[in-house]
Image 1: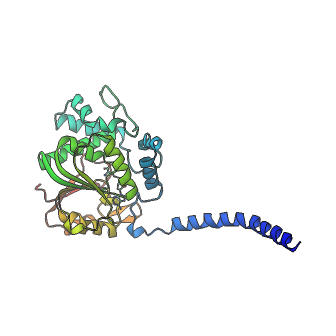
Image 2: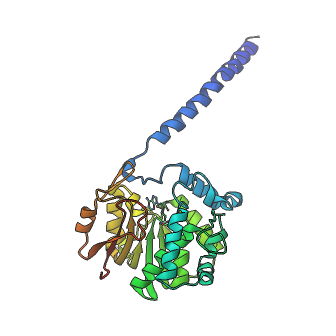
Length: 299
Ligand SMILES: C[S@@+](CC[C@H](N)C(=O)[O-])C[C@H]1O[C@@H](n2cnc3c(N)ncnc32)[C@H](O)[C@@H]1O
């Protein structure tokens, strides 16, 4: 009898405790999410976007549509129709590219991940405006480096779209991608799915324990270094930028060094850190006070 009462009380206790355990677990998850050391977190390191990138890297169904997913498009794939038209004009008029050539080069970026395709100007087909941006930037970079760009390092690489276009336009000795670990897995999947022909390495800043051994010829970081908090920017300067002969970074943190709530290096602070750096206009200008920061490049 005593044993039976003990068992009934035990099972009643577990039944009462169960909902409280669930509640406690949920509270712990919420608490964990709010402990974010923003000193080392970029704007896009916000939980939702890296988790989506990870899911897309691992799940074929998510990968097939990730470029139009609402957790992805606030960070990437938001080049407007008007901006697309401006990029196309430069590609046609400054670089004399014919529409067939344009389509051939950006083809790998037209379908994988199902991007939004827009009808622009008099082009006979709909097109990815983000791919047009990558092509215009790729042509600008080719103008600076000539056909051989050497060992390239990119910080904040999206899904590798800029790298895929550069690989089509230039001779690349090696390509090093630095991004969040979840995003690196997505880059790997995207790169392996396209005809990327260069030798490549993926890294996070922490993973890169061998930093003193690394050196590159050209560094790229478009709308990415400028979204990092100052502490992370300084780490990237020490480990990557200072070990690269020349660099090209499109900056969207204005003159004072602010991206949303993120405080980072001002234009002046950045210039002071390099002996051969210069500031250029972003062409076309996609947001007020955006600028192009380069080093090691004669203007
Ligand atoms: C606005 S996207 C720009 C992507 C690409 N450069 C482009 O032009 O489309 C910002 C990129 O920075 C990456 N990022 C965020 N935090 C980072 C970090 N701590 N280190 C390196 N990359 C980071 C994001 O994952 C994303 O790929």
